[in-house]
Image 1 (cartoon, one colour):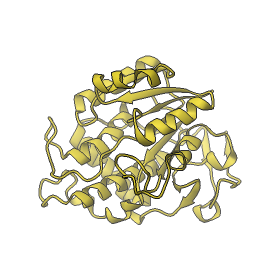
Image 2 (cartoon, helix red, strand yellow; image 1 turned 180 degrees about the vertical axis):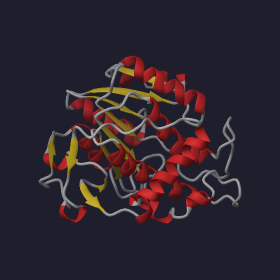
Image 3 (tube, one colour; image 1 turned 60 degrees about the vertical axis):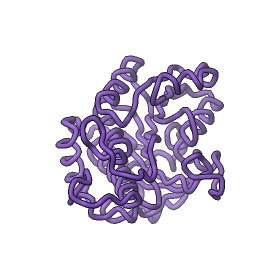
Image 4 (cartoon, helix red, strand yellow; image 1 turned 45 degrees about the vertical axis):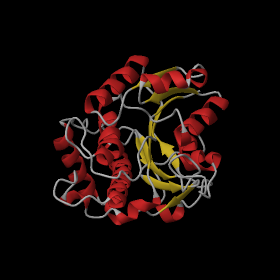
Length: 283
């Protein structure tokens, strides 16, 4: 059975994915943004390996989350689930960053760089990422007037680009991005068309499944099917520039690529349109 770390897993999609994995017999490391939040879900957390605590808005606390996870041991998979939607203002973290960027982009980047490399990475994105083009001109919203929807779209474009970049840079790691759809959570609202179980299925499946269709890397998924993301997300030049920008903003460098002793061979996206695909792992 796998051990999986899930950010933002005391509520919503993160908790639903954690529960699904626990029900399958896997081990889960939960994450809460505060000690009070962790205490409020103590009954649920009692079924997990551990619950780590830290606010992803803070670079210091994000580094502390990485330390806590590393102290538990190497994860088999990490689901970068935590995120915020439309913040009314740019805000400012202790480090001076826009709140949406800090939580949705900087935190998963830092955790990816600082946590011992797992076998699988899953980044939660959104179909709205297709409206996030042009973000490299002002990643931290220091020059532009604040646009909450645009900032969210950009952050979700970053999530897809990170998934693709890691799939390219770390050939031994399966790295994918997921659009869970508009889900009935506190963020999505009661009128959202997608139920929690449907919303969590793809990321939990990618985290642990040994089905051939799940053993791919550098792909964008929606409800167990591959889709084509925005062009910038798949562009290595954009990916490298994004990572360079995130390194500059955080002071955290992404570890170097692994030797390609183990590579992932996968069919083109158009040929991998469902979980019944035939992609295989070659060692």
